[in-house]
Image (cartoon, rainbow, N blue to C red):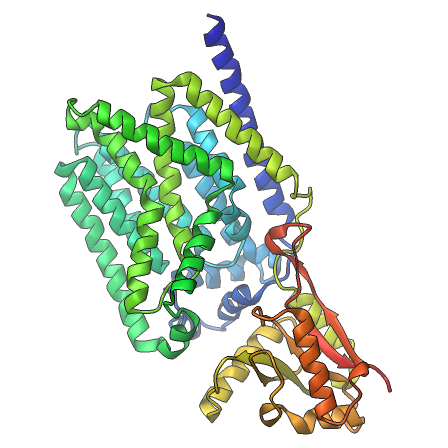
Length: 530
């Protein structure tokens, strides 16, 4: 009796803590909507949303590495909600809240509340949520839609027949898997794995799995046509070159966003426990084992999606550090059912494990999260304000440092495309002031005299051009800020100036929103008065 009461009390404490973590994350989500300016990926999305017509937006969106589904929704959303940071980000916030709601509401009947709350806390405390919950990119949307698909297939796997409610959930699974596949490349791999998981658990549901694969294939063919017709493989081959170091870093960065170490340890424990239970049930009817088989397959989803991405990248460069994160949703959805099953078999152990994971997670988050989120992305908004303070620089050229590792393409077509890209990024927040952004090429982080805008530098150093701004920089990540400052001093010296006149204004942000992780990537280099 005393042991049962202790489990009940610990379970209640765990549920309250999990609910508290979820509410805390939601509060921080809304509190941080306007803290960070749009950063470069979000600026790309907003430039598409600003296109005057839907057709014009699609004409530019098809050149991206992702399908235009999210951009289409964003184009309509900002015309109703507004173009400012909080209003535009509310679309992704809605999908993120939908993900939490799906975890709490959609698990199959009979699943208790505590496992749902634990997984909701895992989602809300994960770096994935912190980075993408309000970001104006497709990750919040695809996570929500994949969660609906995974939990719908879970209900089908547990159904006693294919008729009635199961057919409704089956239709929802096919529709959600197809929509997810039309939203993100890595969702194609996730949808295919969900179809495989459904057949592994319920072989008689092969027709439904085949329908899911057909929808995924249609979305995949549309995406393949988009890539083949409009994508610049020369650019992606450089960005996503399939070297061992690059692939290893992508996998590591992607999978570690699944949650804090304590929560990931809980997931690994459930995987082991689920395998033990499955072995113990080897003589029971397959239909009774179907939900457990399905949950285990979903829990393996993040690894499967990552492996699929690695294999495809060896053929067509497509892997980036965010790709593997798409599969995390499958793992979270599988974990709900596994936690519920294991809590019925080993109630004391699962209660203690869940409570310990929540305590460690809460303590870990308390060491770096502040009540109000910190700016975690490049501050193009402040950079634009600083440039506007130079009255002599209005309607003038502003060089942009661009680092290369090999001799670049200086063709006119490439130059025009690069200038447009820089104008889109650096000029987004310019309203009353206008600048013409042009590349200032450096190599291996060092000044190259033959490629520098020497006439402009010399004129500004000599004072014949009153604008004191020599360059801006956004994301030369391979080199320390001190090295870039040294390069600019060399540039001043090489063009007849005094290097001590260099003035640097950095616009730091906090990596991952952590107070102690200050990142300097965005800066304005100017000259002080002689």
